[in-house]
Image (tube, one colour):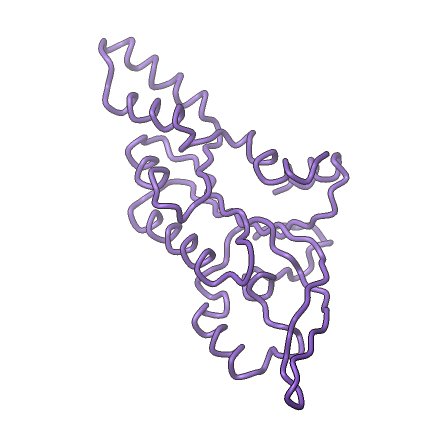
Length: 212
């Protein structure tokens, strides 16, 4: 998260980063509930409305969907409401969620399902274009990486903290024992089909469209 902040500052991008465990005083009590961000939040005046409460209940009020890093920017968004038989549209300032990042040191089957659930919920309950959803991991096992990276669209991309070192280590092991292992073939397929990306690409993948 700190690396993203530095890159954003260098590129003069008007975005904010909320990360769990941060000691940055500028992040005093940031919200990690996606229902506090557009495209999931209701209009500020409708926060206690019965329909809004039901939507929040279905989303778990962010209880289950709280990614480790959220990237957002202030924005004015129109919200409509019915008053005296008329539809009235007003604009409110909201926190527009641009990207969600879920960190997984390793990938077990339960963590894989958790990430898929997060991704599918983020997509299903959006009120506009969904934020970019990425998983960052240090998992060394290609089969476990594949269980998440060969997805069904719930996750935009899976990033490894050092994909080159991982492949090099596996290649050296193969040279020592002779032959090509299924694990190395799996990792190579993940890399060449862009199912697994290096963490160094994350910034451009999120902010490339905002940089002229």
